Amino acid sequence: MIPVYSVAQIRAVEAQEISKRGEASLMKQAAAELASVAVTMLADRPGTEPAFVIGLIGPGNNGGDGLYALAQLQQQGISTLALQYADQVHADASAAYQKAGGTLTDFADGQNELLGASLIIDALYGLGYRAGSPLPSVPAQSYVLACDVPSGLDPETGVAEDNVLRADRTVTFGAMKSGLLTIDAPLVTGDISVADLEFDFSSVSPETQMVDEAAAVELLNQHRSWRDAGRHKYQRGVLGLIAGSDLYPGAAQLTAKAAVNCGIGLLRTHVPESIQPLLAVSVPESVPLDDQQIKEALSSSRRHLHGKGAKISAWAIGPGLDGRTPPTGVIAEVFASRQPAVIDASGLEVVPTGPSEQPRVLTPHSKELRMLLNRAGVKVTPDEIAQDPIRWTRWAALAYNAVVLLKGPTNYIVAPNGSSLVVTHSSPQLATAGSGDVLTGILGYLLSDGSLTGTQGLRTVPNRRIMELTACAAIIHGRLGRVTAEEGTVSASRLIDNLPKVMKHFGF
Ligand SMILES: NC(=O)C1=CN([C@@H]2O[C@H](COP(=O)(O)OP(=O)(O)OC[C@H]3O[C@@H](n4cnc5c(N)ncnc54)[C@H](OP(=O)(O)O)[C@@H]3O)[C@@H](O)[C@H]2O)[C@@H](O)CC1
Ligand SMILES: Nc1ncnc2c1ncn2[C@@H]1O[C@H](COP(=O)(O)OP(=O)(O)O)[C@@H](O)[C@H]1O
Image (cartoon, rainbow, N blue to C red):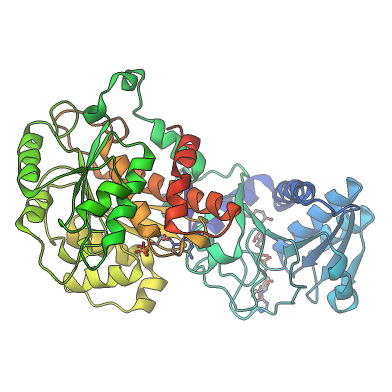
């Protein structure tokens, strides 16, 4: 996991490091990381030989980093040009660059060269950015590497100017900044790498933690054991899916197919009778579950939450339910159980507020979050949610005593105690009807498998583990979006087709 800090926290730690190690040494270290990513980017993009790198140089230390990086590229034999976009630039860095044979020109005089650049390094503004900074425009299709922060993006809030310099990659220094993950940031940073400058953050608590693919693989492996190979289907995990209505017959099928393609031990489905024949054809692996069987499963689960004897080990509630009709009594009994559940879509309209013994995760998008908060008596506008998503997601977590995943380009996972995880940079192609139902199937599967939840017998799943598995589901979903988008256009059904190979990537 990658700890995420505010700009103020990073500035404070940076000041200590500067007093210990000196500003020039830190800047050169940052510049070396920047130059090394520039070289990788040039190698990744064929047809750019001979390479020609242009740096856009701003007035502060961000511009200094850019100049030192250009100097290093110049020394490696790569042709470069620095365009000064400020009255003055960092004096020592400028001298070092010119000593390495580089040319520093006013932006106005050299901007025509931008069309011929194989790579543009954006070193205009970093942490010192203030809203309203003058920003140059670069040709469409430019290949851009941002130094620390894309210029025009506020590294504290994640709000970007309309004419922000969108990057293909961002190398950020010292630590991940909160503003690189929220609001507009995922649309403008490209892939982010954190250049480790060996800062000492031991006395600072991060604002949140970012989960990336490597962390997800580790989290998923945490409780796996060689004994897993000996499990039968009930021990591998049984998901009870309560979904579907005449109004929305498709959603239940998408969630069911997703859970099956994840490799679930057994899927039991509680859907209206009118849908059952459809499901029998589209998801033949699913086994129907009626009200009486749910009651029996709940009764047996009081003795065996997971593992041997448990008829159901986790629940997925909501995809395609008709929110206009009140839930049947049996859903209320599931909500009152101690088995983990993911609750999505119309399930969010009926999940009870207040204390609960059920380890549960609610998965609203921002409009559903507003509805959840409204139901709990909290009035909030869409703008307020957009400006402080973690705060409002936590309100919902508290009101429903649940882990809440706020979905969108950035996924926020927040527990009632205020701890949070962030998953970002998935795939914009996931914004397609039914992709949330697929996520519910993935998460339902993860919650059902005792070797992933780390629980056997009567132990309930702690919120921390629910959060981690929720983050893993979002990561798997994000990769699914990217892999599917590489092949062509994306639909929920195409996502489901790709699940087996994506699950394999995560060790399933
Ligand atoms: N943190 C770390 O670990 C490390 C950080 N390092 C690097 O230092 C960078 C921070 O450097 P920095 O403090 O000099 O600020 P930076 O972003 O270069 O310049 C901002 C300049 O732009 C100006 N300006 C801003 N807005 C404006 C506006 N609206 N209109 C007009 N002017 C405006 C602003 O002017 P001022 O606010 O002073 O008036 C200032 O002069 C950081 O991002 C990273 O690259 C590494 O070297 C080492 C490790
Ligand atoms: N622009 C985007 N970039 C990345 N992911 C997105 C974007 N828009 C939506 N998503 C993801 O797609 C899924 C959509 O879920 P949801 O809104 O419930 O849709 P549906 O109800 O149609 O299935 C969520 O997992 C969300 O995080």
